[in-house]
Length: 500
Image (cartoon, rainbow, N blue to C red; front, side, top):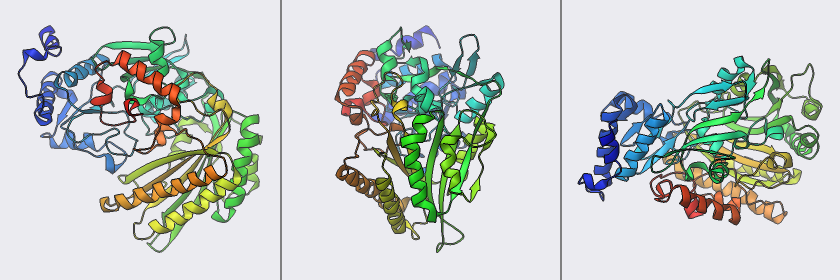
């Protein structure tokens, strides 16, 4: 790109454009990007390339038709792209892996979609134990590339989730008991600001921005590289897998989950688990598959079963895949076929409550009631996920997230379905279900304001749950690094600090 072209992006007086017409602005920006970076810009007239780009998102609900898709492969390209949308004033969205299911969170109708799949570097500096990764990586690829070098990182628990979204949203990990969230392990962010400037944010340079990005999502800039603390693991072997129970064992499993939070997770922070209550159509629309699945993990390989997780095996699960294996193997097993094979319409919605056996039994019963409303007319799959979070996880490092310093349960409902006509009804059922559990938690004195951003639905008060002090500081940092408020006004999706 020539110096004259760069100058033009900083001086609107050089070009006469109707800046009130978003369609005209989008067409011009897309043409501009297509001329400069023809191999990185897919426009709607290029049917095959364009269609494949907009359908990368995990949820069909997020398959929106942007005016073009810009896929930079370097930080400098990203900077130029940012200057283009800054100059023309385009609305735009940012997509790392596209796992967030709601529309407009990582997709956009009209406007420009920054698709980061080509920012996929994975480099290991063994002398400093730092792994540098691009935001467009999927966690499966990160683990696959680092394992031969004898290192792991604190990252996602299933392979297709993108690195950029998970880390900037906080990043719950199998390793969080000993290493905190993924964002706690970022030593440096390389960031493209709203005016196209490239900066680094770390403990010594732009430290306020470094803090804000730890759960601050897309409010401050577009991260083009994460420098992460790497965990030496010479053989790359951990222990874990899925254990399956009959629904008749639900009360015993819930007791084991609660005991794990109150005893096992405290005594053994290297252990972790995910509980999934899966309800799905079986071979016909009059049958159900009802599965209780616990994903278990331990950082250290073992010839037996870790003591902290033994109570689950004492319940005699109907099937277990737990064994010594690689982290990638466990991530693939965790993801597994758990419902409608994509593409499907998807939703997430989350709630944080105290760790309590009675409340979890109540939630499970209400979940079954809600699913009976969904089934069979909507033929959907529903999953209620139980994520135990400990005080130790919350205590790692300073971050705006303000996770409560106590044992807590992050509940997530995920529903998968096929038809757009069902959207409104299903979204309401999911909201009503968690609102009911929230009301019960308030009644029991077990409610929490915090919501995990990466599992939240559009409209949930995520940043408000960080607390007034964090929100005020984030607004100050937003004004400092993005005085034109590009990421508040032009980025359509996400949870906006300006609105918190």
